[in-house]
Image (cartoon, rainbow, N blue to C red):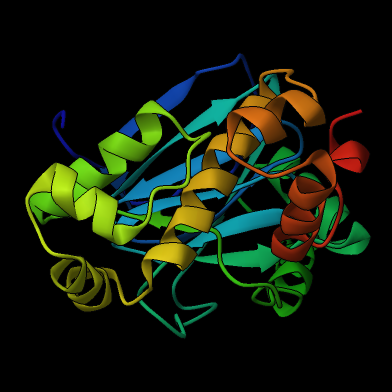
Length: 246
């Protein structure tokens, strides 16, 4: 990882970005809302990767070391929020629900720059009042520290079209099924099946942003059918991939 920058005030701005554009690791004293109104946004923190299409924003508490990357042609809206305005409920990033009003508020605040006028501060307070965690399960791919779990991830990423069980994966990485099950529980607090679903959704989201069709994405990511993928996507994001990536 490159040198971590310290930025006291979180930027508030709108950026038009190309596929693959990223921001290097940094942290700031302010909280920050990061919203990609198109494409897919990945926010990397030490514990894992938060990812979302335009139906969610990522809330990054002040002090959190993070960097981010976009996939697809993307407009990113950044809104810095002074910690005095909104004490963090948690010190972990989280996904924020983005409805029509919240979307327009976020875009307007990001285009205004830092809230230096009374009108801009009023608008920012309205945005802050509307921040609510997404009601759907978080889409986050945890970072593994245990080498055998890293080997499991590498094996699946090499070919997502297969669905090996823990026993088979254990033979590949030199661990028993029971050991791998325990490692998933102890290190990331989720079962192998739940984690695998997150991995598939993560890779599928990136493929959609890159222009792959729903059918191509479903096949490449190991879903039994396009309809099965659409159901999984709707469960995670509250909408279908067709509505987001027409």
